[in-house]
Length: 117
Image (tube, rainbow, N blue to C red; front, side, top):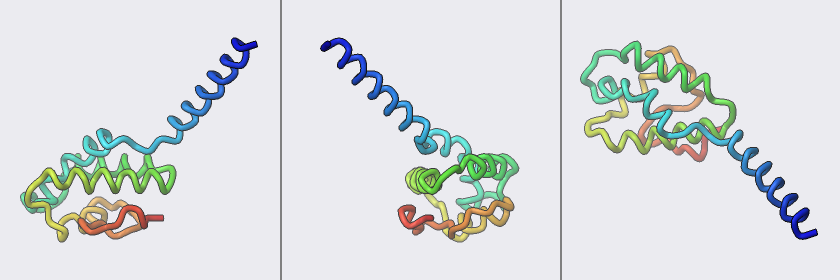
């Protein structure tokens, strides 16, 4: 009887874990990789975002399936930006329009990711 109960408990735990994994937000490693080529523009070194920058951000935008995904990407980007000296809000805010991407919120160092919807 203990074995049957334990097996059922283990099966329920596995179902729960896989359900959580399938609903998991986009990992920061993926976000960082897709956005890395935007740093030159965000720091003012390039006059416009590179094709790689826009392509990476386009892929990120297409991967958003929920508000949680949007918040996760926002949090990842805000954390990553801290690693690069010289990132300027005036350039960050221009990236979506320059890459023709609709994000639905203002892109800024001051964006509150938890208030996105």
